[in-house]
Length: 576
Image (cartoon, rainbow, N blue to C red; front, side, top):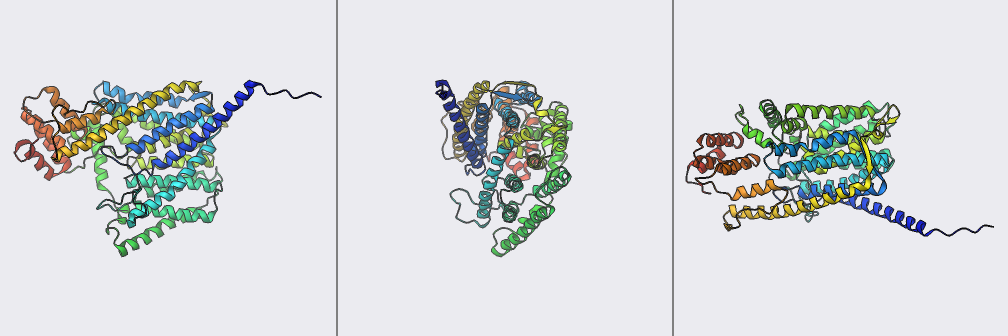
């Protein structure tokens, strides 16, 4: 009889390392899930960038996902799509060095968002290769399912102005008629509820709960959507019915047309009930819920202005996030135009950012990839993923959800998880290259350093912005020695914004100073900033430019603000 040989010491070490790795992955994913949930319910909002902390958390989550994949796989897969998108990441940096983007912080920040978008896609594709897609999607859906209950409670609190969540959520501001949760934007709040609805759909398909429970939960979601009063819900609803019908012959859904009818009926019932409550308790103004079906003429004027800016603008565009510059430089024939910093349409934004040539190429690529994903969708998982992505893109045709990392990065991650089976083969296996995952560790360390510096920058900006508001209201004057804010490293556009707020328009200014005032006033356009720049032009014998800028104030901000700006430039009523 042979005795069993004892375990080799190296085998014990290897076993302990594997156990440690599994434990680390488990808790890292748990932390990432908690942070994802926290992203959409965080009550912190501080000017001048009110969504900073929400979006910052998403960058941290992305780093945690990269860490998990490094622990799980020895090789990192890079697809051709990721390789091409890495070139797009460089566009804002190139625009800065070519003078299209005025401030380094703008170019760097946009490149960081684009790089995060690309990394999120790559993470999703690597999850597919690790055969972990279904487990990851289940975790994602569970987070948003839990989030739906919290958000609906927040919406009810804002509707009835109760005291249950006062410590976690502020009440609606005066004059507002729509719930927005902790995202401070009703349409974004609606998009989160739609993602929660589709996540619940997926859990229902996987028999996570019964049909009766699902019906009750759908009614709860309908309450939140009615209180948010977003017109995007109707657009997404129509597209979802079409998408469901077109894929029924390929996918065996547990959900039927009767279940879809219940969703529509729930929305209508909630609409009528909450309208009655509103009229009985006078919770909101009479025009509140009817805003869902009111046609927004201002949106058409924004699109008209944007198209005209593309046609009349430079070949390579105005630069990423520089649409306010385009609007100020545009000679509009309209009598009244609303000031906007985004065109409220993804494709128009791309055309304005990159010009008609490059912008059209990027738009066509998006349409082509969307069509390919639609054709390849043959599973419930693929359907839910594509439905969520499609819902966010539909919203992006009317609003600007993809300007926030808490929508952009989850969307990119889901794009990486999409069905890629065609003719029995996984196209995700045909990529540009693979390399050892451990090489991502230096990149992750650099990203951590970047995030730490950016966090420190914003803490300075937050403090200085508050001080500037106090100064402008006349409570105290800043020392001349410390008049400028120069200790910001990355977010330099906000540094220039603060310095402009403290700058004075005087005679004898240099051409460089006046040009700097032009760049800042066009980037952060407001009646106060534009009138200060116009005053600097007037005092330094640039009268035509001063008149042009005053005309911009009149066109974008109205007759009253024009008279105030005119007195600021030519009269004695206002002083610096």
